[in-house]
Image 1 (cartoon, rainbow, N blue to C red):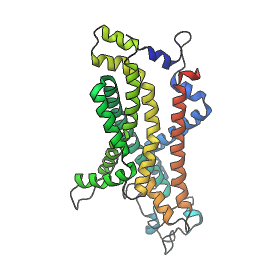
Image 2: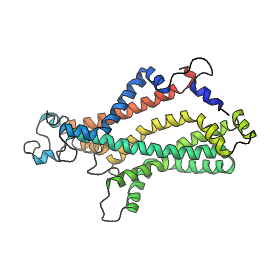
Image 3: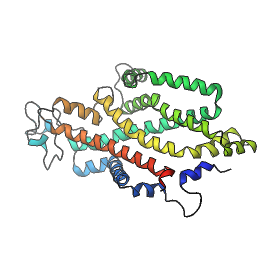
Image 4: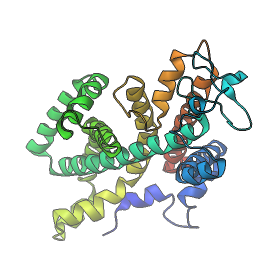
Amino acid sequence: MAAVDTVAVSGTASGPAAPSLPRRILRDPTGAVAAAVVLLFLVLALAAPLIAALYGKNPVEHYGQNAPGLLSDGGLPMLPNGGISSEFWFGLEPGLGRDVFTQLLYGIRTSLLIALAAAAVTTTLGVLAGVAVGYLGGIADRLFGFLANVLLAFPTLLLLLALSPVIQSRLVDPGTAEPEWMQFLVLILVFSAFGWIPLALSLRATVRSLRERDFVQSARAQGASRFHVVVHELLPNVRSQLLVHATMAVPTFVASEAALSFLGVGVTEPVPDWGRMIARGSEVFQADPTYLVFPGAALLLFVLAFNLLGDAVRDALDPRRGR
């Protein structure tokens, strides 16, 4: 019992085998460049401890405060361009005097860990809810539609700002220092609370259409169980939606995490974080504009590359493009 739409997704029903998804992405110059940039960020995140060890710096030590002549009395780097030198490649953080280069490196790890985990959770929840409700229909479908509309009516950013400290207060005893893993867990839970709804709604609509197709009706007529129909007939036909959603969700969560940290409710000290670096850079922009450039450019490049990769994945999976 093969799902007929799988053929449509893969390209052609006969003739030479269609090129694999990576090959189709790499045929697009924009997709190839975006994939290279994304891969570079992934490598930098994984190799951050090794790179920092070879560089000889770490993201938490206050170099500017520990060594004389690096910061002025006002806490600004003494050297021009934010203190950039052969010793500090991207300069020093105003005030604390930490190394900017290693903070950026470890900031990639922070953003990727939270974004990838949140994307995995929201994709899983979206699949479970959307496929199940779309296939069952009836009262389950109506209740889910009402619940989704209610949740979507809430202002998401305000709820994220409100939920983050509430969850933290529930998980950590008063007066106890919050561990790093707890900060990550709270953000993942906050993002997961609402991030699964768009995917679930999209899958619900797709599955409602697929369940009336001949291949699903044929499977039912042959006595296939609901589990078999969902796993072997429906899921293969929504794989493209899942892949595109997961690719596009990562930059969304990276930007959201940076926004929360910028507003003071995301990742806190001493965990390196791009959003908090941007917040600090905006405070000292007039005196030291260089400090804001690096985390801002890194965040822009990261989100742009992932979004362009998501577009390339969507185009590669579109059978109408004839790839």
